Image (cartoon, rainbow, N blue to C red; front, side, top):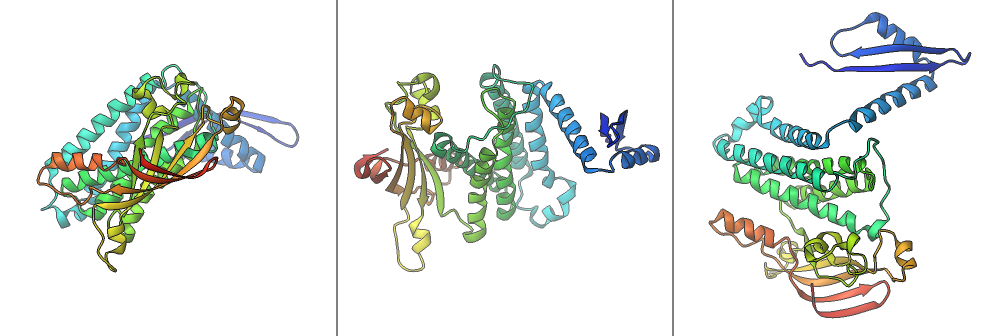
Length: 371
C-alpha cells in the first residue's frame, strides 16, 4: 500500500483574534471523521484557506531545500524514465498487441535503459559541476524573459526540439508505431529539461523561469505539431557558431576559449529555422530536396545578460536576422544505423553559406559567407 503522509501545523486566526494551533496529520490511508470535521470547521473563511496553502507550500519548499541534489536529479531522471516506460507496461499491453510483431522488445529495452542511464549520469554530473557551489535552500523564481535578447530561450527550444526528434527516431528504430513514438518523444523532450529548470530554482545565481519552461514546451510542440500537420518535419531547428570579439571582454561570463564560448557566448551563436521548400512546393513544381531556405537569429554587443548593462559598458547591442540557403541532409538514407545517426547530427548544424542580414543597428547587409 502506498501511503502519502503530510504533517503540517495549521494556524488559523479568526476574526476574534483567537489563534487555533493543532498538529494535523493528513493520511491517504483511511478516513478520519474527526480530523475531517476539524478541517471543515477550520477552513470556513478564505483567509484560512490561504493560510493553509501557504503553510503547505512552505513545508514542501523546506523539504526540497534539504534534498541532496545528486540523489535528487538521479531520482527525477528515474521518475521520468519510469513514466516514459509506463505505456509499455501492463496498462497498455492490449494496445501494444496490435503491433507487437514489429516491436523489438530487446531494442526497446536498450533504448530505455541506455537513454535512462545516460540521462541520470548526465544530470548527476551537471548538478555536481554546474550547480554544486550555487545551491540554496530556498526555491526562487526568476523572470529572465528579457535577458540576452531572448537568445537563451531559442536555445531552450532548440534543445527540446532535437531531444524530441532523436527520441522519436530511437523509438521507431525499436519498432514502435510512428504516432505513438512521436507522442512519447514530444513529452520526453520536454521532461528531459524539466530537472534543469528545477535545479535553476534552487540556484542562488538563477531561479525557476516560466519563460524557460515555455521555451522548452515550444521546441517539443514544434516537433509534435509538424507531425500532426504534415506527418513529416518541414521546419528544422539548426545551429551555427563563430567566435565573437565579445568573449574576450568578459571571459568569465561568455567563455574562456572556444570550448566554452560555443555554449556560453550568445553573440557567437546563430539559431536557424530551415524550411524544406521541396516538401512545401512538391504539389506545384519540383524543387531540389537538398536545398532549403533558412531564417536565422543572432545578437551582438551583449556582454551582460541585460540590455542596459551592456550599453552602460559602452557596447551597442543589436538584433540580427538572416536569410540564407541551407543544405538539407534529411533525405539521405543508408543501410547503416551509425551513418544515419551521423547524418542526423550533422543536419542539426547550418553550414556556412551566403546570407542576407538585417541588423537593428546597421540595417541591411550582405555576407558572401556567413557561419
